[in-house]
Image: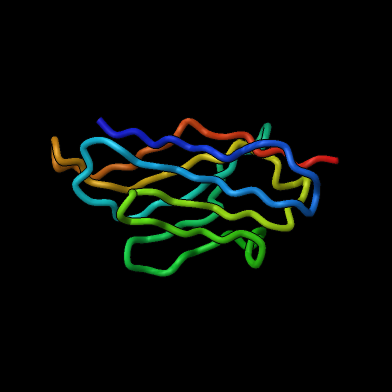
Length: 121
């Protein structure tokens, strides 16, 4: 059993900052990548940023220069530092992990429950 637990969402004014965290726990053998997606009302879930293990981060064009993804591999945790937030960043943000479990040794994708980010004055 694997769980991804997110925290850090909330209401912030335009130009403000938030930091999201996501911790993966459970029967984890190896994590290949972790990342963040966003889903605005009425829209499909879209990639925000990914961070492959041992690789370089990738960002959606809309957040380049404003958001930074980082990982703490010892804690199986991924962070998303969001600066210069805009109203169009308002969405539910989901954590994602591409990992292999100890129990089955199967590799699969796992999602967190989502955390709401609202950017409004």
